[in-house]
Length: 362
Ligand code: SF4
Image (cartoon, rainbow, N blue to C red; front, side):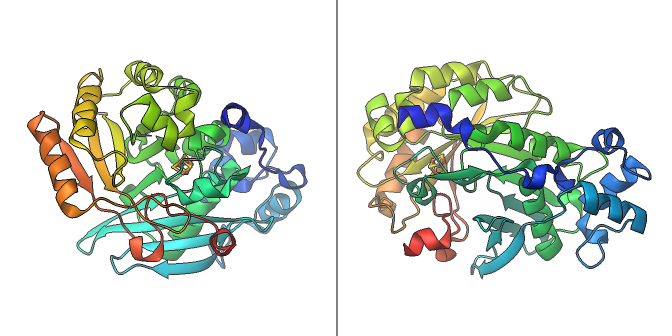
């Protein structure tokens, strides 16, 4: 397992017929490739799905022909939609090679047009967290940057929002984004580009299981998204049992990487803690969690999440009294804590529940 965790960079994403994806290119790439017409125009048209005609960017025939010859223009196809009673929608997308990924569209509320899109970075995941349905699948492959951007454009085309400034992106779907950093970061460059969707880095969060090597690489890159850590246990023994990554990079090493993270103005780290009955929900766990959080150098938010139960795991969510006692204990110790509402639980779209449908059946 430790070997897998270290070497999963070797699960390459396919470049179909050696052609780059239209959706992963920046204006300067169109110039370098000798595209006809203005590079900015092609970029703007390809990144704004609201102005497409018949599912394709609105460009001249000359540019269309050039694209057909030089680029991969396939967009992930939405093949299933599962609407939750809480307003969120889980979408299954088919990739060009037949692999499937899942994403979740979460409108803020009826009066607020903002939407959070929870997106995938890999088909499956190598990290093997024992409470997670995606982890039970194992890793199939990385997504290309074009597939990551295409996933978002496909969602926007179908469900909106219609204004780019209303979008928040969280890399909390299938996969460990820092295992696919090259493609994830290229996608962030495209999302953040002023002439594209222009999504501010403070509205893009990359959530990691604690892959310290990836955190340290991401810390050096620009544009740099905000960071969330899935912590879930407070001793190396307990964390190593549910998250194998901890056997490679333990809690002390993780905190060192977080303390070195170059926090931007107004930025906060997000620490997520999935509460599992009888595993990490005792008063002693709360005490250790408060201590660990208290020793972090940077400002942070602590989110508690009830375990989202699914068939691939025997872990259960704590009963309400236990959850309340855990929160009370943290508050008494001076922690500011939020119990996060999981969206889409009824359609298996909540945190840790995303999995290819065939895997769920198989
Ligand atoms: S929790 Fe995240 S990192 Fe862990 S197995 Fe699931 S998808 Fe992978």
